[in-house]
Length: 142
Image (cartoon, rainbow, N blue to C red; front, side, top):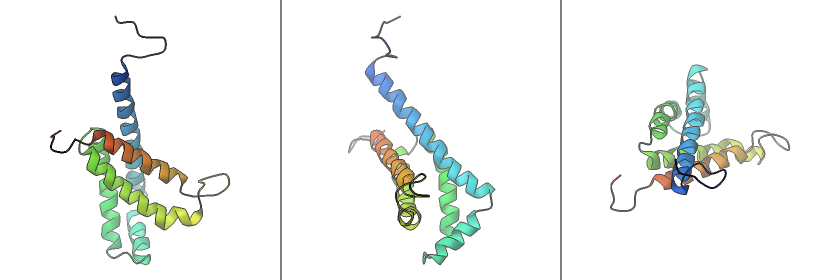
């Protein structure tokens, strides 16, 4: 057994890989919860109607697609498949949510405000960072 400095759980690169894995799986769980909650609560049609009321064409189709991507894409994301494109897609979905829903409510989710943008901004930042961590260098295949 190799001894590592006190408190360390292995070489730095191994700890780093485990940390990125844990963050990716956590994000996948959070994203999946959005889609599953919407689907199981019967919220896809109301979400689509709301999108339509915001002037977004094909609102019901977009709502169904977002729900499917959150449910199915999160499985791929957790498994480490298509992480870069999925992270950009998820970030895009949540950026639109920030613009349409959360920014008008302010910054804070709780405390000094309600339903604000802070959680969604953190989610988008984490998605982008995880995505770029998994991005293959130009010309390389992964």
